[in-house]
Length: 313
Ligand SMILES: NC(=O)c1ccc[n+]([C@@H]2O[C@H](COP(=O)([O-])OP(=O)(O)OC[C@H]3O[C@@H](n4cnc5c(N)ncnc54)[C@H](OP(=O)(O)O)[C@@H]3O)[C@@H](O)[C@H]2O)c1
Image (cartoon, rainbow, N blue to C red; front, side, top):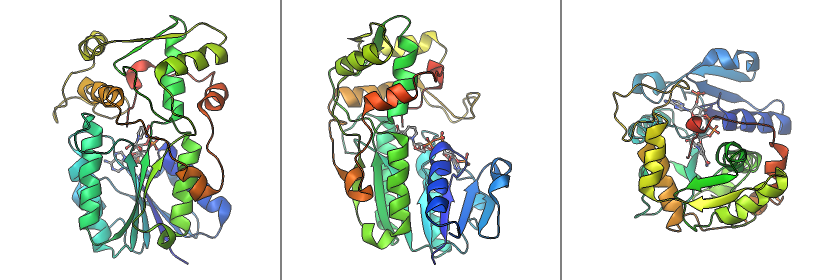
């Protein structure tokens, strides 16, 4: 049996994929690598190892994958550092003779996309192609939970969603559908070698349509008012988010380096049509249709997040 490494295992996606793999096979051998091993201590067993690793420090990742056959490389979050961090992980995979990497990329990865995060993922995809290791890219489109909890729910009291997303369309996807795709690829990687999947939800929607769904789910009128890039940047200025990534900037309370150029550039990329893609890859990979946004929004209706914790990709 192949030993699977989940790299970045303590986050939401890592936990979901770990759970799915163990549910499918309780004896599955796993190596869970994380910056915070304490958070996963209760998962350790005869077949599940917990190891410290941090993409930021190549020496802290170089031996983390030893003995693993298949790597689930969960992308990091720090714009500007992410490409070099992922290179450290790829080098560690080469060092460990890993045979296949499943990578969490993002929707809209194309040259010319203004989204700063898409540029990072495009470079890591190129690095993986050059690595000599078999790969599968999961281009995960915007999580439906982020749309529901971070972009929509905080706007319900005012009844107005304001973003620089223009009239762009996208196909938000439930996290569990993303996790199920990843688990299937990890269970049988050779069946997915060289594949580039666009992991989308079942419908292409713009924010006018999303506001209509929110009106129904929250039983409260919500409308969408597109704003310009400059207005959106001014909003983030007003809530104290720095404009431009700087490696010396202080991390936010969740330990990440957020800057409004990353957040707003993703909105502009959406407005320009880079996310306007809907596929049936979830169904093809898992045999099950993905969950519609309205169902996700209903399911997570009571969960609220502060706007400034928004993660775009
Ligand atoms: N498609 C979308 O809408 C969307 C939205 C947000 C994020 N993403 C991307 O998808 C990934 C997974 O999403 P998620 O929901 O699981 O995010 P999450 O719950 O915020 O978890 C972030 C993950 O990134 C890992 N990570 C971050 N920096 C790292 C570093 N320096 N070294 C090693 N691991 C690092 C963390 O691992 P440990 O904490 O265990 O070390 C953690 O598993 C994110 O990391 C991000 O790149 C996509």
